[in-house]
Every structure is written in structure tokens, then in C-alpha cells.
Image 1 (cartoon, rainbow, N blue to C red):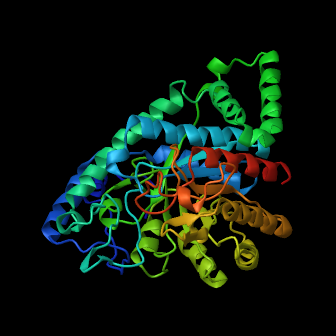
Image 2: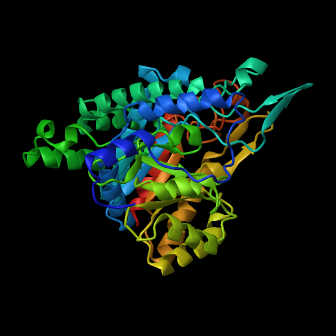
Image 3: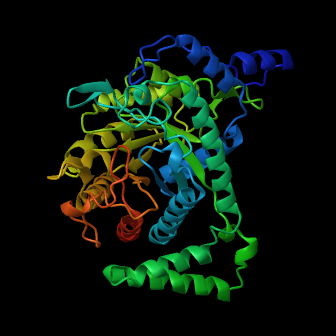
Length: 457
């Protein structure tokens, strides 16, 4: 596609028709009962205003380019599967608050800016290992996220409904509006965030992190003594970007727009989108979609990823080797990260690509507890992050960020941490619709532990 801006008539055609998508295999897509209804919804989405703007995506790409060079660190966090019913002001506020608190601690540990990316305003679709779910004698379609069907185990609820795509769009719009208000309206003021973290340290269970909190406190007092005006600097607000897995193509494709500045297509459903572990086949539709858009993009890599295939992904998705364009989010598992990750990092380094390496310590460490709950051990999460840093230290490469499933609520879904959540506690507040998340306290504890690792980087 030409990089020069098209004339007005061509622009009108491009904006109306959007992009001609190749007819390629696409995994993890629902079986819609009415193709005509899907086409109608796609038409409505194609005519809807963008949720994010191309210029914002370009800013994020520049921030990620800095992370690729070790001049910034990425924190990407949020819900496993967003629910429409939980897109309340309180829930959104608490999730943003948790990410801001973690970012403040990580900024000190890394001694570099932290790029804050929410896993929100679009994480409504989920890949599943099976197309169906069976309970007793009843088999129904699997729950694939609120954008497709409902969690309730009922035939009508589990039938894919394309009208849900429109509800997802409007829920994402209201979520982004609220996030923008929180991050620019004083809620994100560094002084306030630091006070929240001091309250966290006041709990005896987290006293081991008091020394870091004191050091941050001294740094802030030093800035004030030097005459830094918190109210008129970026310290009173933050950049905050939105991301999600680009899984449901009937949502992502119509929400692709031609940028009037350049004539290039951008996904306007979020600033950063990624291709999942289950959909990264080189000759399939999800990689084709990611290759066409000009957003910064990510790819999840699990322990079965082949280094040569990863290089082919780079050639397909980042042929010009643009810093900040491509992020690899590794999800190896605590027991695999030191064995599986080095070969991939070495092979990518040989290509000269300036990718961002982000650790997802959640998805490779999931198991079923003795009480039947899908869960994760906090110690395993920490161990994978530690292994991730060790691999990059040994290879002389840059550990660029952290990708975490979390909530701002006090759920009991992951075991361990200083709170010492045990198997018997899981039933108390197990609220996730899909995968287990770190609660507010566990998320902050993770941030303090990673800050210690970063300070030694």
C-alpha cells in the first residue's frame, strides 16, 4: 500500500470499503447461526467512530522502541476476560489504580520510564481449547467471551450472538472515556499513587518492601526540594494505552481504518493488539491481519515455539525491522523458561530485529487445584519472571516488560503471596470467567519483587 496520502475520492472509497481481507483459515472463531446478521453488524462497526487514533498508536510505538533498547520498561496488565457487567466505574478505577501503583514502583526499580498498557476496553473474546463444554448430560458451545456469548450455562445464552459485537464496541468506548479521565484528571498524580503504596506497606505482611518505599519517598522529597512543580508537569497525569488480543476478526476487521495522514491501515479497536499462542500460524488470517495494520503488535510465544518459525513471523510482521513495531510476549512456564527461551532470543537477535521482549508469567503456570479450581501459584509466577531476567542477562539482551492478568479487587484466584492464600481459600472469592488473576495485593507484591530484579539489571 502506498505511503503517500491518497486524494479525496480515493480516501472516501478506502474509508467506506476499509480493507480487502484475504480469505484465509481463521481458528478460534464462533459458528454464527446467521451470516446475514453478522454482515449487518460488521457494516455498523465499519461506520462507527474509532475507539483510538492512529497518532496515539504511533506514540506507543515510539515508547515501545525505547523499551526495546532498555530505555523504558513495559507494564501490561488487566483482566483475563472482561465482562460487560463488570465495566463499572469502581472496577475500572481499581484496575487502573493497581496498574498505576505497580508502575510507580517499577519506575523506581528500573530507573527508566514505565510504559503503561491496560489489558482492557477490548479483552472480550477468549480462545478455548475445546469448542464445547459438557456438564452432566448437557453439551453446549464453550463460553468464548462476552463479545460472542454468555457465561451462563444455557442453550440460548451460549448461542453466538453478533449483536454482542456492538455492545462490546460501546462498552469499550465508555471504558476508554473513563480511563482517559482517570489518567489525566489528577487521579494519577504521583504523590497520590505513592501514598497508596505507603498504605500497602503499612500492612505487616509487606514490611519487607519498606526500604524501597522509603527510597521512593526520599526521591520525591528531593524533587520537591529542587522546585519541581508536580501540578504543572507530567507527574500529575500519565500516558495510558489500551490493548487486547485481536482474536475475533468479525470485530477487528471492520474496526480498521485508513489513516488520512499516510493512507496506512490501523486497527482502531485498541492501541496495541496481539496474536495469541493458538492463532499465530504464518499462513492464517490472524497473522495476515497483524501484518496489514500499522499499530504496534505483539505475538504470544509458548514453550513449543520454534525459533525458525519465530524468525518467519518477524519477516512477515516486521520486514523493515522497525523498533517498537513488534513485541514478543513469552509465556514459557516457570519450569521451561530457562530451557526454552534462550534459543528463541538468540535466533531473533541474529536477525537484527529490535523487538520488545515481555514476560507473561501467568499462562504457562496454570493448573487445577485439589478443589477443582483453575489457579496459579504466586511463587511460580515470580520464578518465571526471575528466569526471564536471567536469560536476558546471560545473553546480553533487554528484558523489556511484564504482562500480567490482574484485578483491582480482593479476589482469591491465585495461591500464595504474603497473604498466603491456600487451596481452601479459592472458593471465597473466585470470580473470574476464565483464567485466575492476581488480586490487588498480589499485584503490588509482584511489582516490588520485580523492582528488586530491575534494580540489579
